Length: 248
Image 1: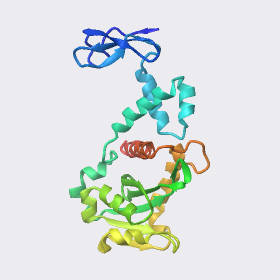
Image 2: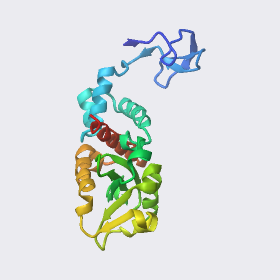
Image 3: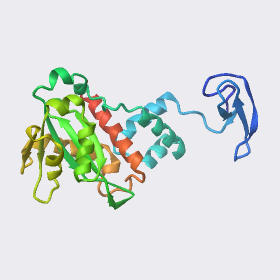
Image 4: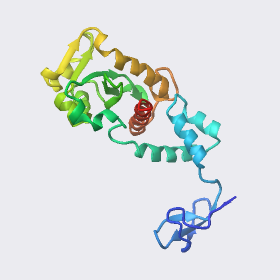
């Protein structure tokens, strides 16, 4: 049994009894920060080493159940730490190119494309719209939504201001693809469309990497997302780790 003798939030020892939990354990309340907690905790908090390994595993194609089995932790504790990690993902996806947008994006080239995914069931399609900087290979923006005009608008709004002003965007598609959505949203002087995949080979290759890194995007798998919010946050987490790996 792990003994907790101070407030886990502020470290104060000024606590009073505050009833009991659902499981019958004595509950206390910190008079300094009003945090409620129990002194006698069944499990120790996740160690720094455990958190580091979980963070590495979340960026690879490993199911959540497999992480729990390997690290010998409960599922709800993994979910709690996941939420903590996902909330810390920066809005710019740790893209270093976006920081120097006003200087470097005079002749910037971006490749944009969509990746099919689903949440809960395959009829609930959630398309991943993504823009990749051709020079640095970093992902500058992503959006999850439908494949029509609204999805293209979401990607456009997610782009850094410098890209929206100066970058040239290359897209590709076939007659059955909904590439017309780009024409409806992206300025004509900044959009280049080709029927072949030649101008989007880098982003297409990244999609292969993404399916290998993120188990939620594997087509035939039981690791698909059950909630849209976690689906989006997990993809952003994997993409952010990918961008950081290109900066070393």
